[in-house]
Image (cartoon, rainbow, N blue to C red; front, side, top):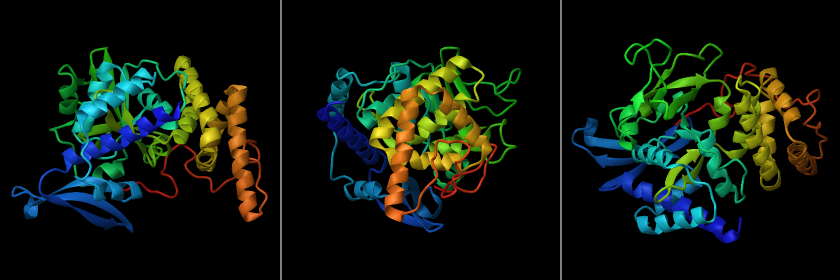
Length: 388
């Protein structure tokens, strides 16, 4: 994309997240930090006679340079809805992909209720649609329309943030977007009251699913509580890899909706894995096509991040290596070359700094990058047991 378009999107991301902070952390209060397991987390603390101790706290996020900068500039930079509307209009006129109207309304409702402040992550096609703007390149398949939206959050994060959405429950949030939304039965024959459910929908027109990583091989199946979201999440294997270290983006609807999405390199490799686990071959082909598009861009723009994500996934054991290797073999030739180039660039950079010869990384028979773990797709990333 032309550099001015990339610059406008980057500015929109900054302004949209600043505007959300201005709204969420208004009035008399102060930012305070807590240290948990050696890591600092920030909260907005304000006087509240109804709260224990006369003070309430709203979760802000884990300490990062970007978060500290936003805290430092809180209330110093005012963003105007009209200006951001104009930026979104300009980006859409430049053919950047925007969500459909209903998805846009759902994202607005989720953001206003604090869902993304509480580190829930948009996944699936709605996330893929923002990667073109994030990476500054036009992606094929981004304009694919979708009748659903998938949202994910770690159970550990949901329970540890000490905060929750600004609504009675998740269904109430969705009904702000469209009053026809209802929580759906979890299994055939079960009613709303009989079972926990991670599904919400408007008849057959639209569906929202709440997901969470499975914590061990036996947790697939019944939804588990996500207290911060006022919802239950359906546990899925491989999901912890996808939503680890989410990134901030903006969906091009209205004045721009600040959302969290997976890191694009994790999204691409996760698509390779799930493509081999699907029974629906049409969806599997779509997964591979999206992965191929991203791999081509990432190999040029972020080869070391892509290689690091590949190492991490491959090191988890045969339950991860097998679908990765199979999907790799099904990729178009140019996507295979792109991935191999990224891995080779990483190998050469490592050799230049350590003078240690590394094993080629695209040969299934020779790749060994760490202890085998999580062979069934369960378990958290080695360097980050999920925390707030």
